[in-house]
Image 1 (cartoon, rainbow, N blue to C red):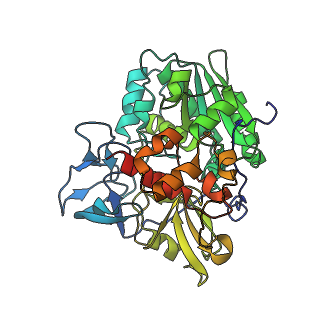
Image 2: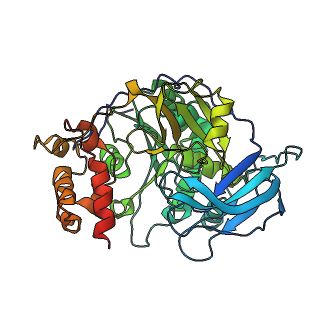
Image 3: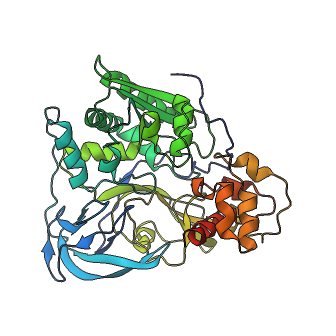
Length: 439
């Protein structure tokens, strides 16, 4: 393995806070009595229901399809009865369309047994990835089968697997790399065959030495004359796991503004997505459950839980013994890029990486002030943008003029807001600028 790698511009070092769950083995959460499966869980057109109220479904059955546009099908995580086709709470859009399934606890669980996949063509493998409903687990939910079919003129030569998991608190990927390294590596081999390439590099931050060792061993065992898989140790720096920053750290290539990684010959997938691809192809298992880190000083028992998609946060809280009185904020996702929620009735989606129950000691509630022109946000921004100017223009009701400061290149990592001594809500300014500039 090489010496420590990282991206060259910006970045911050927030407290890691991973000690609460880093050593906790993944545990399967008992299936709750009801699941609320949101119909729009990926970038692109939301699914339309393919089931009706009071209809019985079996585990793994399709319950939603995307007829036109970008998207993947949706599956029933459990056997049961369609209780409702209505609306569910959502951390961003308040209420969104969903399907509620009443669980049949007497149904026999479906078994998913491994079978050979090596003789399948790239097209057959790609179809299995689509049919399983797999999207990017570690990011914005981009349909994986689309990413695995880059433009014909893109000379892709390298697959990067993202095992950085640089957000504080979150350890879901860490535990999967430690407990299921062979499945992740097998997923990488499937992806390589789909792409028609032979090189895979896996980036893992050096605060996970046990995962690095486990993945390196599995990678060495899987590498052959026709397949090169290696593990690269990354320096601890946020947002190391961002796609463009990971590409720079591992390959030295810089993705041009408004371009995709395939423009520089790279495809990037999260390690958990690679494992899901393995399960889809080798086990014929649809993407219906995922590992979620439950952490923070306000939860009675932190855990890395394997939960069914559609499990409500309230059911998770009940399973883990409740929340403490000191809780002041509940965040879906990490503390840097996640979203605070006002209700525990929000269900887990395919992109939920963690749920954090934070106390007063873990957050900064100080009010923000005017920009003091210190320039710290300029130094911290990994994209080399001008967050302070975006904020000033938004406050001056000139959001439509912020493109000149790179607002559409911002991926909202939160480094600027974290480092700002005036505690200005710079990420919120960016989001507002994007919305208004697109009118």
